[in-house]
Length: 477
Image 1: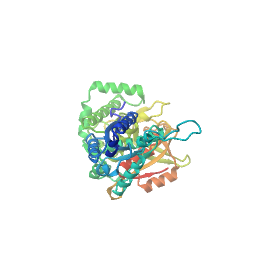
Image 2: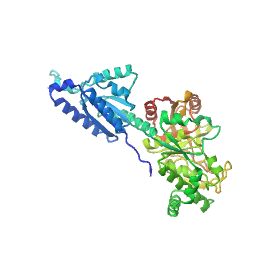
Image 3: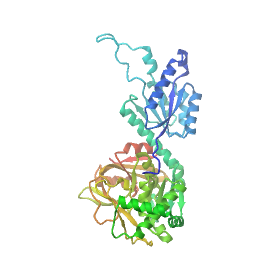
Image 4: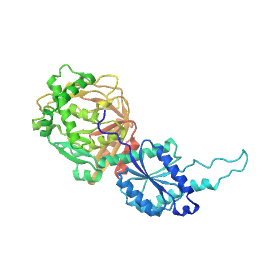
C-alpha cells in the first residue's frame, strides 16, 4: 500500500589485488573476478556496483569516485587476494561513504586430499586464490592509524550469518542515505515549550540530512476544499470497508477528515516530502482547515511516509527512514505507566500506523471531541491497538553541544487493547529490561518523549545506522 518505494541498499563492491600478481598471467585475476561477480549476484537484497578487479591505486581511487558519483550507500571492500593497503587507503579515508571490510575468500578452507590416512595436500592454487586475510589486517591497521575505524565482517561468503551481518551494515548505510536526502514538511512550528525536540534546523540538515520544508495551513485548507469529489468518495468507501465506522460520526466529519488527508498526501507528493510533522494548534489557530488531521496523519503513516506530532521533525524523519528500511513503522509516545503489569501505555492524540493494527479485530473510525483545539468538525480519528509481537523503540534525540544521538530499546507489544471507549490508537509496550530500569535509563540517555516503533529486534540495524552517521548510540537491553 505504501506510495513511498521500499529501497534496496546500493552497494559499491571494491575488489583488490596487487599488480604484481599479473606476472603470473591473467588467470588469478579472471578467476577472482568471476568469484566476486558470483558473490555479488547472490546478494538479491542489494543493488551492487562492481568495481572490477583493482590492481593499482589509480584504479581503486577511480572506483571509489565512481561509487560516489553513482550515489552508492556504502563501500564493501573485499581482498580478492592480498593487496597492499596503500593502494586504496587514501580513497577510503577521504570518501564520505561508509566503508565495511568483508574478510572472506572463495573457498571455506583447503579441504582434504587423497585417501584416508594419506598426507594432506594443499595446492599452490588454493593459497594464491584464498589469501586475502592478511590484506584485511594491513588495510584495517592503516585506516585506523589514519583516523578511520571501519567495521569488519568475517566469515564464509555463503554463510547465512556472514551475509546477515553484512546486510545489516548495508541497510544501515541506506538509512543514512535516506536521511541525508530527506525532505520533511513542517506544518506550523514545534510546540512551544517542548524543548526535547526543539531542533536547530541547520544542524539537522548538515549533521543528519533532513531539510525542513514549511507547509502553510492555508494551503491545506485550499487543497482540502478543492479535492476531487471522486477521490473523496473513493476514500470514504475504502474506509467503510476497512474500519468500523462509529454510528455517531456524521457524513460531514468523515468527509472533512478525508479531504484533509487527501490534501496532505497531495502536498507530500508535490513537495517531494518523505515525512511530515504537524502541530495541531497551528491548524486550529488558522481557522480555515475544516478538521484536525488525526485521521490524515494515520493515513500518511499507512502510505509509508514518516510522521510525528507537535512539529517534531526529528521523530518524523527517523520514522520515515524506518518505513523504507523495514517496511512498516509508526510514531508513538509513552503516555502512562502500568506499574503492576510492568508495562507502558502507548498513545498520542490520534496518530498511529493502521498497517500495524492487530489483525483479530477491526479498527474503529470515530469523531473525537478535542477540547484543546477548535475546528469546524470533530476530527475523524482511528482507534486500534497494535498487533502483539517483538518490537524496537527508538529515538533520534538532540545531544549536548547540538549534536545528535540514537537511543534504542527492544521490547514487546503485549496482547492488550484497544481500551474500550478510548478514541485514539493505544497499546501496551513492555521493555526488555522492565519498566523502572527502562524509564530511568531512557531519560538518563536523553531520549525524546516521542518515539519511532518498528516490529522485530532492530537493535543492530539502528545502532549500525547511528554508527554510519558518527552518532553516539545508547542501547537499553
